[in-house]
Image (cartoon, rainbow, N blue to C red; front, side):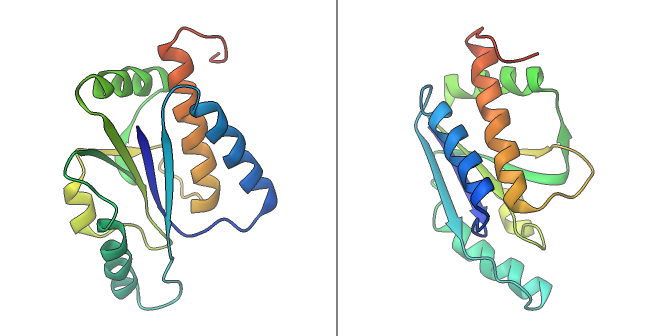
Length: 151
């Protein structure tokens, strides 16, 4: 099972449609759960990060293999990520990706992660990043199953 815990909701119709499409594609391969927690918005940074961390922790299980999405995480190609995901799925029934909000993730949440992943040193809006993550997860399953899609 793939679980994505993400801070913030999606308002834009075109992003919702992309998320729905990739979610439908991924469900051909595995169960997928997307959990949204409220973005604390414009409150003081440390306070927002701590409140969001408490909300995220409610959805983390002791049997989850946690991957946080962070600018400072390791960068991988799609092929490397697919190999990693394939190996993880052999030993872990639950892979949980965590996408932070505007201010990022608390150290407490980062410390719970077994892997810290970065797509780029650039900053992306978390709404768009959710689509990017889903697309990469779908791409991983296509690569793992030797199916055409990946170029």
